[in-house]
Amino acid sequence: MKRICLTCQGALLLALLLISLQGCMQKLVDSGQLSNDSGLLSNDSGLQPDVKSRKPTDLTLKLPETILAQVQAETNATPISCRFMDKRGFPWMLKQTDLSESPRWRTAFPLNGQPAVILPEREPLGLVLPHHDAAIPLIGRVLSDAASRCNGNMPETIILLGPNHKREGISRIQTSVLDWSTPEGTMSAASDWASELIDKYGTPGDPSLFEREYSLSTLVPWLKHYFPTATLLPVLIHGNLDTDHCRALSEILTDFAGRRKTLMIASIDFSHGLSSQDALSRDERTWFLIQSGDAAGILRLGNEYLDAPPTLGTLVMAMSRQTNAPAQLVGHAEASSFLGHPIEETTSYISVVWPAEADPNPLPSPPCGVSRLPR
Image (cartoon, helix red, strand yellow):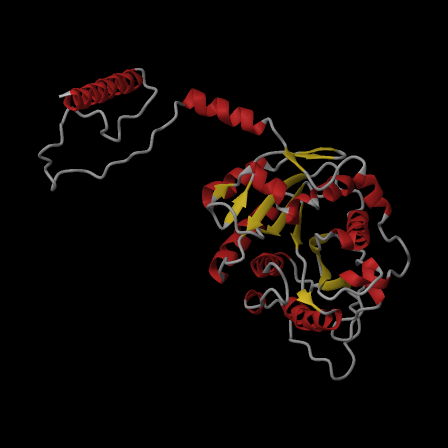
């Protein structure tokens, strides 16, 4: 008997709870703070449902606009942190920039018979840069040269493409409307373009993901230093983005670049987990595909060639739409050449520039026996 009473008491409490919950939800609906699209507050008991006329249940609860606006305002007020750089470490890193006349990473590792060249004396539209700390001497020098080639007419917006190494988040393409906190101050977001990209293609990314993803977070302080007035559009790209989606993204980014002065940068490290000799050998094929504008070929490459085929493929497609100038090699090396000692499994770095227009005095053809696809 006691057990039956306890059961009855439990059922009574549950019924009272349900009635109270329904009353609270009804008040929210009456006040306009909750949508009743779901049909959760219907008087129909549902004991004998009409299957033919029953609509699918939408269980999404819509936040009131005032609360949603408040949440967005609080979120937008918190800049993304460049967690891999601080105010003490970044000045030291700036001093590691290789300002010598002939850096070893420009002369010692030719690709397909061609050594890297100094950035041409023309406005850069696109760059490929590494994101490993080991390659700091190269990163700083290439960005320094790129800024000087702008002749005071700096880009208004930098589009920074990077691989989503761990493929985190719910979308294969993610961006953010948030500003970035750097050791040299705040780098403002290109929030108009970010919002448009979200509407057209995907979802905003979790701010903590952008902080953790070093392909972006590592480079942002450098961009703030060399392009202090530019806004930033960060784009994280999953490694499984296919050719059609890369092309669609490249079209959107090209449209953006036609609206205001823009520099597009892909943050990429190349051969992974190989010996120095094998890594440099793989880079021969990768550079051949970049130089040929073969985005489809790039997308077929594996991790032994680069960590971000869709990121590079998207940039190559975008550059083919923006300039008739071919890609030019401005830096090539692998990690041990910067560290000063051999390592068993290295990472290689290829740095590339696309100028705004073709060079009227192009470099001579490569040595006999070195193949090159027609442009």
